[in-house]
Length: 132
Image (tube, rainbow, N blue to C red; front, side):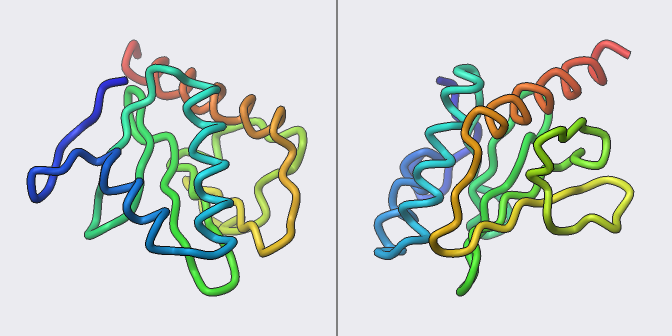
């Protein structure tokens, strides 16, 4: 897996690893699980560390970012408004014309198959925009 950028001599993947350890609670577990699902859905995904510490996954453009807040883990899909979401995973940032987000509170279950399909759809959209 190719990794974009670095800071302090550490790869973005290493910085994400460290963030997951720092969290030490359910948020780290959820973000780690989602990270694994993203990697599984797109083995060519590039992990990046943007905007002063936001884990970001890209392939021909940003797929999504992963942020943690006190009550939710938030995955924001850069072009989410353009993605089909038949499983209705998007539950936040629904009013915008570009982004859509999935807020995952403690104890929530995510449909892993639908999430993987959403990641693959985002990758296809990014690739199609490069060809246009």
